[in-house]
Length: 245
Ligand SMILES: NC(=O)c1ccc[n+]([C@@H]2O[C@H](COP(=O)([O-])OP(=O)(O)OC[C@H]3O[C@@H](n4cnc5c(N)ncnc54)[C@H](OP(=O)(O)O)[C@@H]3O)[C@@H](O)[C@H]2O)c1
Image (cartoon, rainbow, N blue to C red):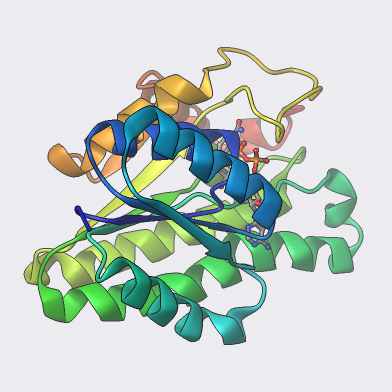
């Protein structure tokens, strides 16, 4: 196996583009999500285009009791891993702000499930003293807004978790990279009102696959979101709370 990479949430548009960009660099892949039929199609397409070995299997972020065994199976099948990309996510809708059962699903899919599988990944890479973990969070996690604060809170928690993990794994030489996309043209954002500066998944995927070879720990994608969020984070709270965002 050539430097295998595990992609979690591999049926997402951003993950697909990321998988293709890793394959173009010669990495073998393990694709995981809940939709095995779609994974089979994506795996066949990437294998055909790039000639790398692509395996796939079922993974449910919310089934945390299956995560340890899932990762062991992947490691055995791929004869080790050189990196992991955590791409799964669930936007839900704003009903979640008033109905906690809907909110709990957003938190479970975006944060609890991520923290669970990442803890197993970290325990695998730490003693090896090499490897990378890329977590796809969101600019939505940088500041709470009335339009999506349950999703934002889950992504904000994920960003903080990745920051702590980076601090823990630094001395073992394992890279932990936080990716914060702005708006990307995918199924998640299809038909949403008020989108601007929407990026293509291909641009985002290419930048993610380049990240392990670069030194940045936190990547805003595209780059200008770093400055947009810098401004948004610095709006004083007495003003921010009055805005319709
Ligand atoms: N699109 C944007 O504008 C945007 C902006 C910022 C951040 N992001 C983040 O970027 C990532 C990819 O987003 P996208 O827009 O490409 O997503 P998408 O097309 O909506 O796909 C979502 C992915 O998450 C997976 N998923 C959801 N719940 C899951 C669960 N319980 N267990 C396993 N997999 C699960 C789905 O896989 P299955 O249904 O096959 O299981 C699917 O692959 C997400 O983390 C998202 O939050 C997106």
